[in-house]
Image (cartoon, rainbow, N blue to C red; front, side, top):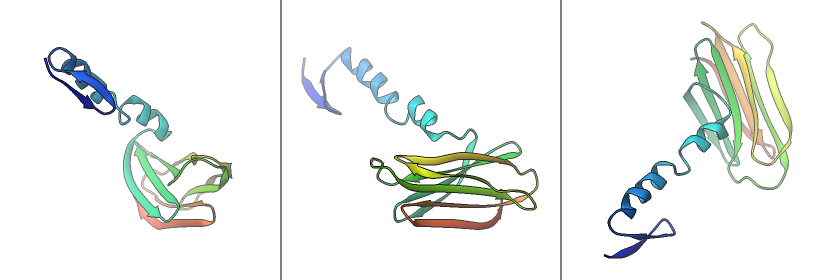
Length: 130
């Protein structure tokens, strides 16, 4: 039987292809990627900027936000803020290696405003109804 390289693994033809398919299904977009997101719910908006991105998720009456660094590694200033219209902002800021947040607010039938920054560069959504 033939052999080949698949994703850095030596894969033999035949029964090993089933194993390779299982490894592919459990790749970086599997359960670990969900756990790394930190926010439950469905993604509703992503705002990209030079040093990272601001991600918003919605689950029932709640909205969640996180700021994700484009290049994780060294500790640097990061922040995320999420405010429902007429309510107080939930914020997380500090020196992080990967992300700031998650922060969650109750926003049933309310607009929200989110902002995030990594190393002094950031973005904001303005008021949006999700």
